[in-house]
Length: 526
Image (cartoon, rainbow, N blue to C red; front, side):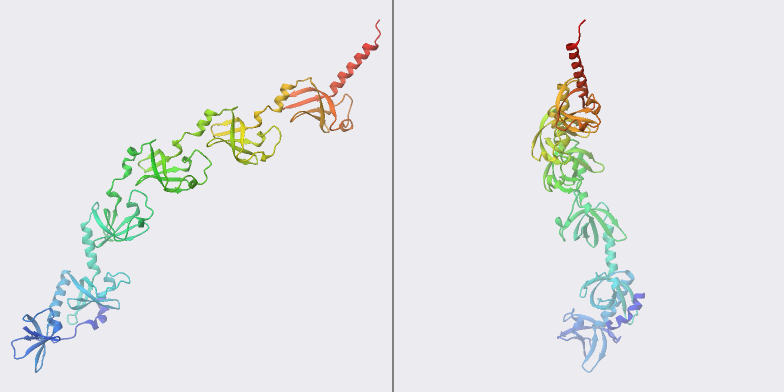
């Protein structure tokens, strides 16, 4: 009612002109011209009416008119007045019965539109127009219901197109039930789903309900205007809308997953996505499985998955884990191959001599490939019994090594090169024993002793107390580096790998020998 009050002034310019409420009578059309029609009304004067008011009638038809005025030539009559009165009665009946009428939008005015309904002007506010934003509805036919009728004389009428649309939407929605399969038309394609229309109600199909498979871009599958069938999965009475599913029209492929792809089965799929932690492989529409990066290959050298496999590649995989309830499938590529570590354990043992190719060199050592995906580490200290440069070997070199350690738990192999030959200490143990006398050059003198090179990488030490039978305060006073000295091995320390020698012992023995010889030479026999 407030709408009626607010729009009274707006309607003033669009109401029919005041007409005389004269006598009503019937007349027969006897002729027509461009402007007027002439009627026989059983009077000495003919009646004249505007041709536009009887355009739906033909010569010979009888029409009901009302007298407007009379002059010397004609009785001026109006068919419009009769129609307005008749139509206004129809409009009041439609208002009382909530009947839907057709109208035509003739003008845009402040706050709404003027709609011609049964040749009467009615006001339709914007809020009741059902027009979309920026939509031009001038000249269009609309269905309306009469919201209110006020002022019999001025015939002020308020109409609503929105309520007709709401009524129709409600009627359509009442015919639809959850579970129904209906055909809808796509109106919009969004990133997250399809906006569709069923008759006069809107619907929505979420991207997750389009197919059992993962879909990234709906525009690659659908076009606006496409008609698709869907199953109604939800009704929204308040908003007069529905939600549908396309995928529920076909069986969920996961229902028979354990029959088609049982545990430990092998199959071929297509790589559809690559992520940091692995790849997703599509076995069929709606069935994807994950190959974790750790299940791509036995090799630990993989840094970039796309160097190993690319989207679109077909790969052979093995089913290693299946969770039908949670729809999770774990696959493996490396499981199709024998674990190279198992092969290595069969082929290599501690003490095995083999060859490998240098694949990486560090300051502290190098890595050799013994088998595909099986490396061994050689520490720089195991290059040689002598001190060597870390750049002794380069990538690509083939090197013979001896396996010196196998860590099965952590899958690590340690190898050495120097172990291919006897250690200097092994040579010492084989070649020398306590009591042996050696003659060697002095290669170092310290405050506490003299050092002699016994064998390569093995020095022997003569402590200052064993350097002479005589007291020596400073070894440098008697010995020089490069001097050749003779000494007796007095200790071989296997645990600490040390050799101790003595000059003093040889001097004492020599002195005793000389004394003995002198005694034998100069002694007097009684």
